[in-house]
Image 1 (tube, helix red, strand yellow):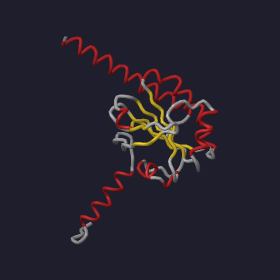
Image 2 (cartoon, helix red, strand yellow; image 1 turned 90 degrees about the horizontal axis):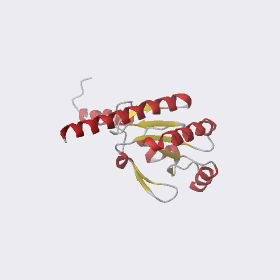
Image 3 (cartoon, helix red, strand yellow; image 1 turned 30 degrees about the vertical axis):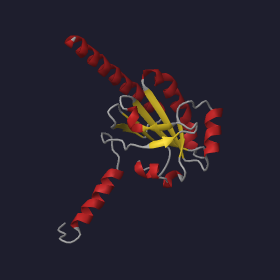
Image 4 (cartoon, one colour; image 1 turned 135 degrees about the vertical axis):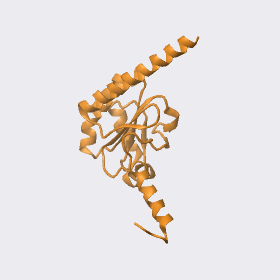
Length: 177
């Protein structure tokens, strides 16, 4: 396309589309939020850990059906460095908090006003839920839209990589010492 006038505008628009399209291997957009228990959480402060971000809502039957797998992943892998962050698109924070407490969702819970119209949803290009992102220790997306056994297998595989990397770092440190 040859556009002499407005070409820089077109380039800017294409760049915006690129940012909104999150693929495996691209950096996960940083965000900061307040959890339902009033604590701040910032994605970039979790570097070095494996982070599973789960966009969901109580009214979303597939989301609720997937929660036992998210809970199992948290219980199985939190000790190995997995951090789960659930981001609720429910109409109000009280509903999300009550549900999380009743169902033993002990990992950080965030509620975003506006659901799929919120800035956080736009940042991650989430138009529908459930939507999940597995973010590696370096801050890049390693998998998307994980559910069921695939969720557990992928997290287990990434935890093994994380442990292997830690062992190699320790060995290299010992060799220098």
